[in-house]
Amino acid sequence: MSIPVITIIGSSGCGKTTLLEKVIPELKQKGYRIATVKHHSHAGFEIDQPGKDSWRHARAGSDHVIIAAPDKIASYRLVDKEPSLDEIISEIKDVDIILVEGYKAAGKPSIEIIRGELGLRVISNPEQLVAYAANVALDATVPVLNLNDARSIADFIEERFIKA
Image (cartoon, rainbow, N blue to C red; front, top):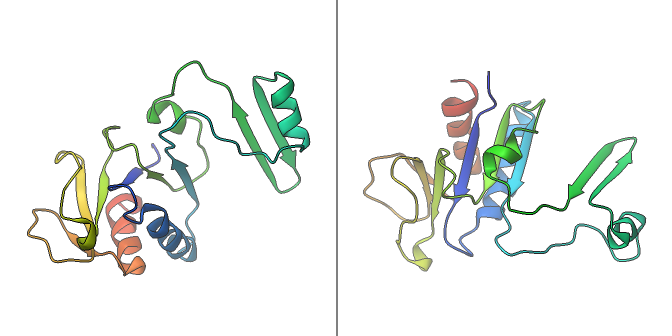
């Protein structure tokens, strides 16, 4: 059985990260194991602090750097092209759900955030859209969840994707 994947999408600055910060603890409280993937749309990002050993390994030319400790492991590698979401999630194991920030064109089920003060422009593909998380009333053919109620959004994700 494959791990369910849901993307949280919306225009820049709408609160995707903030929503995930609130939904993740709600799902953790229910006992679920969660993986997250964040799409960074611009080339080049650093996960290491300059001067740290792993940063020094990468600067020296290592193509794949792994940092291991008794309680966690991190791995990053250089790539010739951006991997697809399917390629990324194929390496994720031992979780109950994968929550993805971004990747609106990946063909995965999506919850789109609509924040009234940013406008009502929809960016989701209707075939992927399973719900809106909004702070305004919407006339929609999918559920409209209260953007400010992380518990109800977590309940929706649980019922629709984890328990399904």
